[in-house]
Length: 404
Image 1: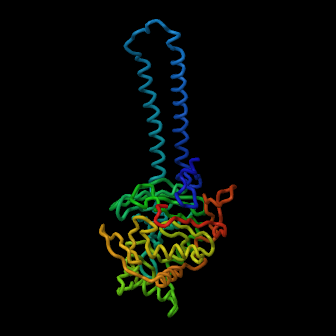
Image 2: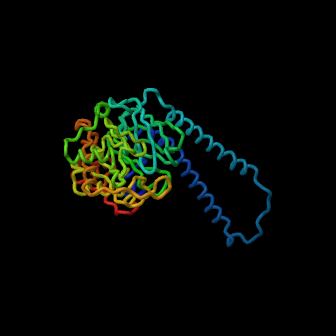
C-alpha cells in the first residue's frame, strides 16, 4: 500500500523508499530498526498501562473516595530519565549515520543538479565536451553503480526537492545555494525521481529518471557524450528546415528561436534557460517525465510524434506553468507578463520535431538499451523490473490542459 501511495502521478514507475541496493538506504534502514523497535515497545507499554489502569480502577469497582497525594517522585523521575536515555540513544545513532553518509570523498563521481520550474538539468563538471562546454543532459541523470556519486544541487528560481528514493534520500534545491551529498546504488537500472517540494503549478509534473549503469557502460556514455557533435542535417531535408527554425526562429511571424533557451552540443545553440537538448533523440521522456516512451521506436511511434508536436506548439496548454513560448499565436507568460506567441505552421513544427529526434548518441552509448526499469507497472512480479526496450511498455497519455 505504501509503495502504491508513493507512485509518481502519471508515471509508469513506482517510487520505493525500501530499496536496499543503495548504501544510503541500508544505513537509514539500520538506524530505523532501533527507532521502530523502541516505538513499538513504548506503544505496547503505554497501551498496557492505560488499559490496566482503566480496568483496575473502574468506577463500578471503587465507590470510595480516591486517596489524595501530591505526587510520586520515583514515578516522575522514571518518566523524565527514560525518555532522555531513549533520545540520547537515537541521537547517537543519528550522528553515527550522518558521519557515515555526509562526507564527500574526492574520488566520488561528480554531477551538478539544477532544478527549475519545472525541469531538471544534470551536468558532469569533470567531463568537458570536445565541442565546448560541459557535458549535460536534461531530465535524465546517468550515474555509475557501486560507487558514491556526489550531487551538487541548486535551484534557478524557487525551492525544489530532489528525491530519487531508490538511490538516496531527499535534498532541497535552493536558489543561490550549493549543497553536495552522496547517492549510490549497487544495481544497474532505471529509477524514478520526483520533485518533493511544492514549487508551482506543475510541481507534480516535475519528474526525472535516474539511469544507473555499470562502470564500463557509464564510461562509454561519457566518452560518447564528450565527443558528441550534433549531426549536420542533409540539405533540404525536414531536419535541415527544423534546424534553421531552431536556430533562427521565424521573425516574420514572431516565432522565437529555440536556441535562445536551449543548448545543443556542437552547434551555436547555447541557451541556459531551458533543458539541454543535446541528446534529445536518445532520451525517452518528454516534459520532465510527463510522458514516457519506453518502446524501442519511442520517438517514431505515432503517439510520441503527436505529443511532441503538441508540446512544441503550445507547451503551457499541456503542462500548466510551463515557461516555453507558444507557436500557435496564443498568449503565454514571460517574466510575469502575458506575451503573444509567434506562429509556426504544423509542417514547420514537424520539421523542428524531426531535427530534435535526430539528436542521438551513438547506439553503443544509448543508456536505455537493455537497462531494467525498476518499479515499472509492466514489470514481472518476480523482480519488479522490466527490460528496456520493452515492446509492451505503455506511454503515459495526459489529457491536454490537465495537471497530470
